[in-house]
Length: 355
Image 1 (cartoon, rainbow, N blue to C red):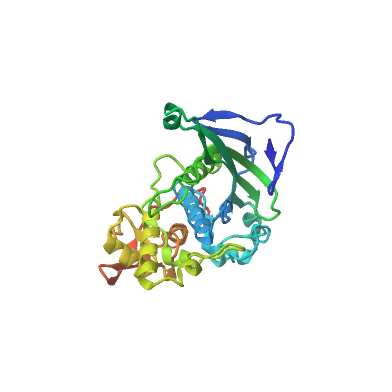
Image 2 (tube, helix red, strand yellow):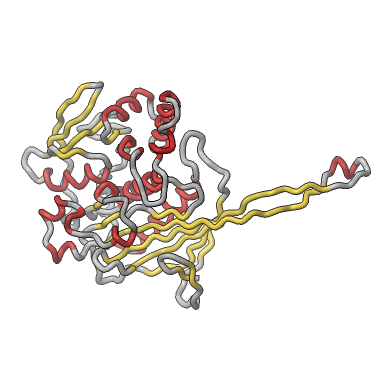
């Protein structure tokens, strides 16, 4: 089975890879041509063809993919907050020079055309199964009877694909397929851990397939590992035909809205202290989960080099430019309810990371 971008189609399985791994299968893949080395990655919003999905879940999963890119790749990343998110996916794929003004100022046109767009598509097929169960107690009492048990079977299909950023044609991809229980969830957190796991495996596999064309150098200091993206900004994130989280809870009492916001923070940063949650919700910036000099645990990064930040990839991208100066980057941080300024001097990235 191979899949076009928007639907299923059956073709000869010539060259397709089929691997089994604990209920998971790699059903199809096309590696990146060896002569292609992109200068950067544009992360498109994750497309969810999943019942009951919301705009917040799209945003959450897109930010999770950006975290993986920051951890595993040395390439510059343009991500979620750089887009007019109410555009259709076809419109978003046709990235213009105006997508990110900083990149437009520092990149030449020919180099921009060597960027690639990463898109993740999640499709879920559900089926209801019905089984007739023998009532053992009634049978033992000499009154045989049966009752029906209804269940849900789910198959998740995740495709991670690289596209030509200007023309939109697919260049490399991998597809992971696995069964899942749609009734499983993390209380106060992830509504579908099975989908989260499948996305991470699929994106990681795509990066591994590309060898050193996308992956970072071993031992490189991870940028976004201890940073949590701004949840207040995500609350108002919208996508075509999907309800925003803010709209879903705005009619509820204030204390209920506040409790649900804290529950969402727990999804992105489990076991986070309540004090840090209050600070992050007030500061509307990037929350630092663990000490990452010059940041302290519980800091909220508000701006770097005078530019406000809402997502971890923006911290990484801005520092690529200002860290080249002798003094490094000036970061505005909310710490213990006070705004302080620290100097950010993260080491330069390998030469493959073009600003």
